Length: 413
Image (cartoon, rainbow, N blue to C red; front, top):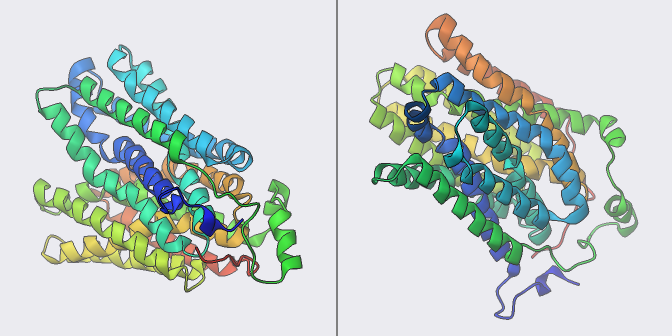
């Protein structure tokens, strides 16, 4: 059955409703978990007397999300994206809903572990599978649109949560708002998320060769004998330092070079906004070029952005530097699932993406430490930023050993 026939009674392509719900899920998951985290630090410190170090230590549970990804990915390949997405949103909702009942620090850590453990199941894993299935020939630009949810969440969630906390409400009420939002999106996901009514995606090239690929399952043993797997995994692991070392400390760096906190905050807004455009534009390029080449451009663009941020200092040019870095940094999240799909296909995407995501525990574990050591030993984040720029260069070079599967040719939607 052709994917083009997957329309609702009103003639609207169902894939777009799936994309919209996935967009909202990513916006909530990333926006509330990462971008809005800092808004709760001071209220929690005042409420319980916990130090900011203890509160911020909960971010280390982001590594748990990496470790749970292989399990979630395998289940997604077996049962589809809907149960993983719905259950992940519900688990995140529970993690937010029970926070007003906290009395001890271990409660904070336990609920944070629940929240971050379900994070990938509400964002990148279902997005990668669903976009690849619904829009096989235009997945580059559609993946960019879907993953724009990350940036949209970064732009909107801090504002909405800040208004909730500041408008005579409290941090408890703000967490309940987020929990209710997670429940609502989970309900939408249950009724809207679906996969195309097709036995398999049509293949346009040599049928015999592609049948072998389509019906085959990638096993861990097969992956461990594949040079492309190592090249992609290594590049993605290094690429994730952009989140843990650069993005998490660029605000502090800008303030350290005498940029006002207000201007630094606006720079982050520019960074997030440009990242939305980067996702769509570089996503579209993957439909014209091999994804590994586009990913190389992504890494080189981030290197240029980092260098400019360090060289320009506090002048007006910092706005351009931040915008340039944000454009390419934002595209990275959309290119990751596309790179995996172009090399290994859709059928085992969840399993492979989960295994690759597990290696990012290194990025999440050492990225903040690298930034902290840089500041403690040198008084700035320059050394850490330069180190990450070098990592990006190594990652781009490593992709020379990655190979796109030329048998993956899908029909237009």
